[in-house]
Image (cartoon, rainbow over all chains, first blue to last red; front, side, top):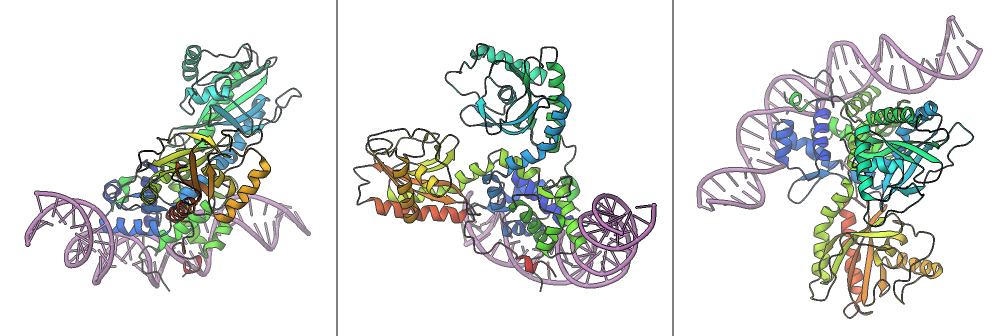
Length: 262
Length: 262
DNA sequence: AACAAGGTTCCGTACTATGGAACTACCGAA
DNA sequence: TTCGGTAGTTCCATAGTACGGAACCTTGTT
């Protein structure tokens, strides 16, 4: 059986590249032969081509890691820029849906979450521009969503009491995070700022790790206990579709290894 | 003229992929045709193959950005893990050369630099294990090297006075950074901790941005004014060879576009 | 020294990739 | 609405690239 695409060589090379990029540690030539099912000579030729183009790198022991092209993409922050641009339409739709301020947040060092994209509320009373703003993990909906699903770690030390409703007990927080995992979304009610209520849901990358969270924020007067479930539901749907755009739960990735060999 | 490598299709696809990965913004099909000099049909076929394998992504407007494989590599922190492993032999040699404690540092949020790899001093009096330790940019050699070459930004606000020799005036610091750029290396003499002297030089990624710095640290008794230039010179040499390993100043990257077309 | 494992190069053949042309889709203008 | 122009995909016969078995080289092991 042959693939009728007219790109056999490229498909094979791409699968080798993916095999290298997905592994955390360098991959050996032999492992690549096993994984692809290709002939030694073919594998050697393809890998040499990938190496020549800077897509893979060979260390002194002859093992392969992703090459300079990957490295400079990552250092440049390409993934985050990409996330913002891919997310934009999703944020817009969520904003349309709920009418409230919508934010995309990612974890930062030091137990903080930074808002990296925003859609403004349709109401006169709504959030200001929070892009670039960093808030603590433990008292923001974005932060709780990140921690609950493994996208961030709560730092040691004192948990700042931002308002009289801020949860500062680690035990209480742990219980709440369990609830977050069960529900699929996080809520903060006036824990960061009096009168501010938010819900958030996690965003997954294609390999299942959490890379950020999506939130809907508004005044306590609109996001009442009764209104929260609907907002949370929209938020979760949006987060899921953003995850899907990033390749999470993608049903089948191109050619399967078995189909590579003749 | 043809390349006698037996990998024409893979080379061409790799060049298309690189063109997409290098650009900060999405690239159009037409730009890719121009850049590669290939026929429309060939370009279309190759791009479809890359897309099918998750190496590029096509947005709604039909423009191309790096695909999920790049995104998840970057989010996973693959580049940093890679840096540590690529750097290890270079650090080891620098340690051998100078006998002092050698560190690799990268910029973190909040005006800090984190040491992510280390080789211990050969002497009994030397640095302890600093891996994971974060120190301020303005009073560490690593930090100054990073700021001077654009790899980090000095945060606003108060510059902490760690010792009586810490430079806390922004004007004085600016002057010193100019000197760092001219010399190619940074020095701190008892500015972070009494008795501790260090020199550092920047490490460049393949596209010329600064991703980290390499330092040599020791007690003031050994790293005297007279001994500093030699240590700094070794440090710069090591930093340059590490940069070279990362592809910086690589003379020619594989096949040139002109050679792609038949 | 002989062997084994890991990788590369060689070379004739088979079949994959090529690119011109035809085709489709979409857009803006008249 | 029709019309041209631009952007991109599919088709197909042909050329020539990529294939893989086997020979060969290199390095580490018994």
